[in-house]
Length: 222
Ligand code: BG6
Ligand code: MG
Image 1 (cartoon, rainbow, N blue to C red):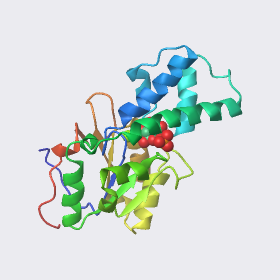
Image 2: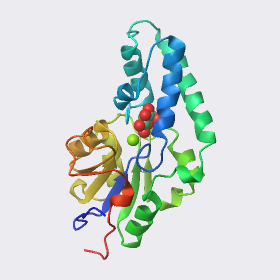
Image 3: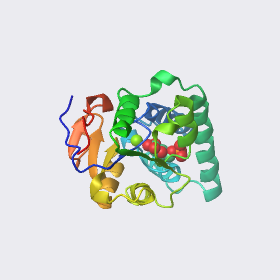
Image 4: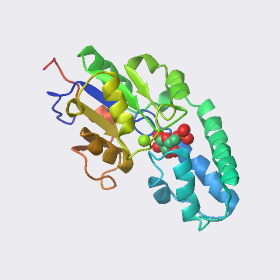
């Protein structure tokens, strides 16, 4: 367990893909299939730059990797993004309950039991069906996702909307993120970022953990 000071925390905000559930791999596979069809190699390393990024922006980055930045019209790009999403949704339709990441359910439940609010802060437009599939929708006091935001991370909008909806000041919020743009968004929001994932990739966080099972729940209200 990683020692963690919950003293000033009133709201814990969680990214979805790669923090709560192991879906980041499906985003990667769906983008890789598109790259394969376009004839270039798309590696996990390339994929790091897509984490946390909106669907349309992800496509732009992918096309840059393939040297195809100016090769397609806006209509063609829209079609490619829709194809990627169809592939991703096919993976999600087979999502199993055990693909929830270690510690997610216990931490959400434990925080709520101690009076700390919980929020989802995700760029994904597929967030709600995923939470429903895992039976964890009721574990969030508020859900802010790609359908309720205008600006993509690293803009702080997604996290600030969650805090405002629950009338909690940014300095009383912690954000769990596996993407650099998400950590940057949390910092821009004036919140405390916790990096979830492989050490050495993410910078700027207060604390680095490999999964939520490493986080110690508060034992009593501060
Ligand atoms: C983020 C993922 O959570 O959501 C990104 O990290 C993804 O990889 C983004 O592109 C948008 O997701 P969706 O499901 O709306 O395409
Ligand atoms: Mg993520």
